[in-house]
Length: 133
Image (cartoon, rainbow, N blue to C red; front, side):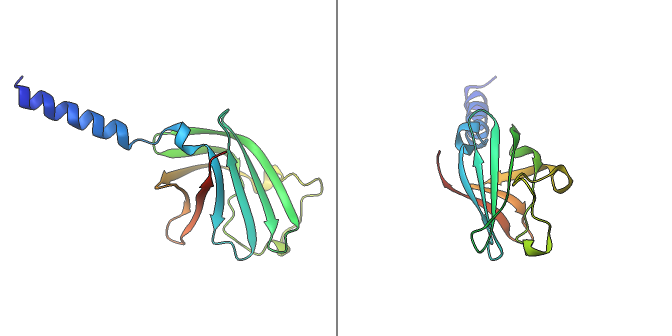
C-alpha cells in the first residue's frame, strides 16, 4: 500500500473517532426547551443513572423519574424516560408520591448532537446542556 493511502486511512480513522460522542461529554445537567408550561431538568450521571425532575411552570413539583441510560452510537438509550413535549401538565394527574409512574414512561433512544439531546427535531424540542455535574 502506498504511503499516501495509509496516511489517508489514518486521517479518516482519527476523524471518525473524534466525531463520536463520548460518555464523559454527556455527563451533566440538561434543561428542556421550550419550557412555557413546564420546567424539566435532566441529570446524567457517570454511573449510567439519570434523574429527571419536572416542575409545573409555577414551580410546584410535578414528579421525579430515575432510571438508567447508556450510549448507543450517537444516541442515548434511556430506560423509561418521561417524554415531555411541554404540554400543560395541569390536565394530567400528579403522581401521588412524587415518583412518575410506569404508565407515563417509555424507553427512548434519543440523538445527541452539539450539546443537546433531541426529543423532537421537527417541533424543536431539545434538552440543552447547562453545565457539568
